[in-house]
Each structure stands twice: as C-alpha cells, then as structure tokens.
Amino acid sequence: MATSEIKTWVIDPDHSLAEFSIRHMMISTVRGSFPGLSGEIIADVNDLTTAKAHVSIDVSTVDTRQKDRDAHLRSADFFDVEHYPTMTFDSTNIRRVSENVYDIEGNMTIHGVTKPLVVRAEYMGTSKDPWGNVRAGFSATAELNRKDFGLQWNQALETGGVLVGDKVKLSVELETVLKD
Figure: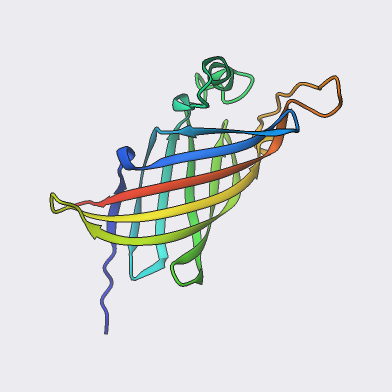
C-alpha cells in the first residue's frame, strides 16, 4: 500500500510566468504578463486531488511591452497597485478530469474582491535539476470577467463598442522546487 508523500513545493519565480490576454478595441488581442510570482503547493504528486495551492502575483510587475499602458494598468483606473499590490489564488477543491489534468476550484482575489474561479491545470511531471533539486511543473488556464473584480474602467469607441474587453484569459506556467 502506498504511503502519503505530502510535501511542500515552492514556486520558482525565475522559471514561472503568469500571462493574460484581453480584447482591445474589439478588433485585436493584447497580451501581457506578470513575472512577479510566488507561492507554494502542498501536495502528494501521486494524488493531486488532496493538494492545496496558494499563488500570489505582484501586480506591479505587469508587462504588456508598452510603458504607458503598463502605468495605466497599475493606476487606480485598473489594478490600483498602491492599495492592492497583489492578486492571489487559493485552492479549495481539486478534481481529476483525466490523466494529469485537474480542475482546481478556488478563490481568486483581485483589486480587493474575492470570487470563486475554476482553473484547468495539467501536471507536467517531476525532474531533478543538475544541482540535485527536485522540481515539479504545472500548466494552468482560466477565464474571468474583470468587472466581477471591480475593474470597471473603459472608454466608448466612436465606431461603437469599447476600448477594453471584459473577458480575460489567464495562462500560468509554474515550475516548483521541493522544499527540504
């Protein structure tokens, strides 16, 4: 009979990234990232349905490759990083969908507002790095409505529609390191 191997896996921020995409002017998609990730997963990699995950994103690290837009996203019109410097996700339940694929239910907090969110995640496996550290990888996606989290700012377009879409697609690549 297999024994439980619950261990703590710490997010390696140098090898992890949170990305997002959102419609712009109703005709294109803008992509950006948040390289400032931290958190941990407490799990038995042989039974991830019992895992607990906490991910924190430093919102001030937002990068859309356009300096003025990034400054606007950090402002009170959007993330208001002065008052809400992080967004977080904390798992509450994990259900196996298929081999190495899971639906993770949890609470997402953005701009001081917490809402339930389901994240689809794939466990990519474990490996030992050249320095003897054991690493585990995860790839996850989700969608949310930014207005549900109080991110209301928008601007009407002369041709109809709005400048910024409501639906945000999230993609997170996590590489974690087994904590001693």
